[in-house]
Every structure is written in structure tokens, then in C-alpha cells.
Length: 117
Length: 116
Image (cartoon, rainbow over all chains, first blue to last red; front, side, top):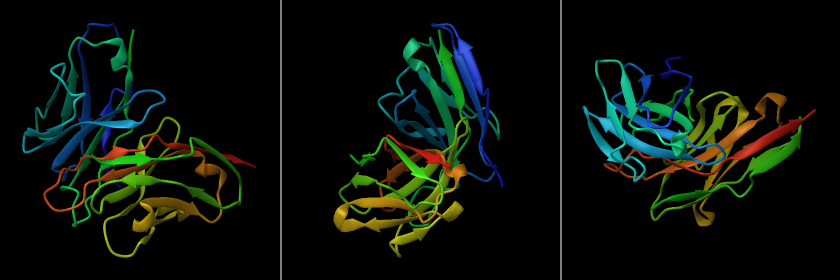
């Protein structure tokens, strides 16, 4: 079964450093997402991306964050000047289309655990 | 804005016993509803989803869920739990209707422990 793959699985970074989390979505999918889960809290939506631009973003997704699809297969999340509170599991996800009556589903990767020290 | 409530933070059941995990949502129209499972160190795996039609939906691993509009609920059930079902279960909702966003809103999760 096709799957979303994420690298790295775990990264430790010093506060103030920049981090890039990488994702390879499922190959025929057109919509890409980042979610995050702070330890002990719910999974939160960060951003959705379609046709090489952001289609929706949450209030969490401020200027510190950016996303990019640098080539035909990768989808990245960049976090500039990391803060302690950025420590979380970051999930990449993809779907073939939008969630409407056609029944598209969002498939998640296994996550990248980011620890900011 | 939509929201999801999972009232039970932690549930323990014996292997072979039945299971029901509760999920209530708040949304003005008919939402799209999902249950995901997260095993330790794993990502989020889709168990089942409801978009329209039959309110009782079947999923993988023997799980089912029933959409009850009158109660704004989408409870997850399994008639006989296996030790391998121990995991965290998340209910999620997305806005329904064509042209709306694909953003999922998750509940806080229910951690299931299975005793032998």
C-alpha cells in the first residue's frame, strides 16, 4: 500500500536554529498537509498546500513557518528560529483531492519528532 | 468552527470484551467524520470514515462506528477487543460540502489499554 514517508524520524535542535522536515507524499496525491502534535495534546492542523501554493493555514502557522514543494516528489516544512514550544511531533499528510462527496481520505506519515533544547 | 470532544481520556478493557469509544462533534451542518488510530511510535492510521449514506460504517480491524445526527455523535465500537488494539484513538471532523476546506479537527484522543 502506498504511504507517506517522512524524514527525519527524530531531530534534536538548539533553540534559534532552523529546521527542515521532509516528506514524500503518495505519488498521485495533489493535496499536502502538515499537522503537529505537542506531547499530550491533540493533533493540530498547520497548513494545506495545493497547486504550489498554500490553500489554508492555521493561526499557528505564522511567519516562522514555511512550506515548499521543491521538486515533483518532496514537500517540506521549514521552521525558522526554533523555540522550545515548537517541540512536537510533526505529521505530513496527503490526499488525492479535497474532502468532499468523492470520499477522499487524508493519509498520514509516521511523523517527525522535533525536540528543541 | 467545528470541534470534537472525546470524553474518555483513558479506557481499560479486557481482551475479548466489547469496546465503545465516544466521540461528540460540534458543527453546523453535516460533517465528514473519521476515526484514526495511533500505535506507539507510529503515525495516524485511518480506521473508518463517514461522508454520507448508511450511518453505520465498517472499518478495518473489525471496527465500526455509527453516526447519530440527533446526538452529534460518532462512537467507535468493536465487539471483541484484541491485545493488539491497545493504542490511542482519535476522532476527527472535517467540514462537509463541496468546495470546503480539507482541514481535519481532531479530538484529544482516547488511550485504550487492553488487559489479558
